[in-house]
Amino acid sequence: MRGVVGFICLLVGGVAGPALGQSQFAGQWTGTYHCDSQPEATMSLQIEPSDSPLHNGVFSFDVAGAKGSYAVMGRMQDNGQFTIIAGDWIDKPAGFSALGLSGRIGADGQSMNGLLSGCSGGFAATRPPSVEELVATAQPMRLPEGDATPPEAFGGAIGGTLATAVSAEAQCRALGNWYAPSIGPGGFDGMASDQILEAIAPLFLDAAFEPVFGVPYALLDQQEGGRHRIFCCSSLLRAPWNGALPKCFQ
Image (tube, rainbow, N blue to C red; front, side, top):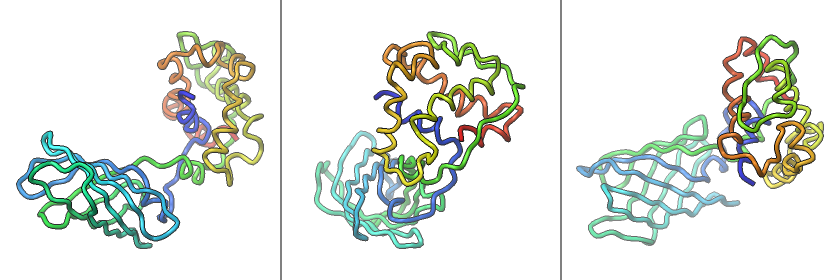
């Protein structure tokens, strides 16, 4: 379902930094590194989830067009420090050696930096939070009161109650009324990502979606499908009632 993950931003609002744990080690890390006199290289580090302290993964790189990848195994300590050792090559370009990494994951859980074994230089990489992390750190929210901010002009095919609302606050309330029956009073607490997507799916059926947005979801193009996400996740955050919006959508 195109755009469903984007809607999670709309539904959960502000996100606080997660506590470090093994889940902060797994994921798709991307960044850059330097090794001796080589030009700056891009890197991708895929760490697989694991129930044990050891995690398998794949390290991929691109050094001025020379691309390669090899298997890795790593372990992260409770303080965020980690060590990764190189395994077998998957795609080996001529003249390159597989290197291990050691470093630390930042307090935000979404950044890492450190050193590469066997060469002078370091690396830095980031990864986006997972759906589970977004849900786990979602803050309690409530609908704003008052109608002080002019409504957002969505344009295109967007209509329904969003287009007829007399204020941005009323548009926000319309979105809250749209999703509330499907999500329920318990919100996302304790729900796995597949359960969240299953709960959200009915929102995109024509009977639920079209009265609010004025068009079947399947007929929205990419630009139209993103306007209401921008509306709730960006535009309104700069509104005069900034203090109310992060507490929106309870």
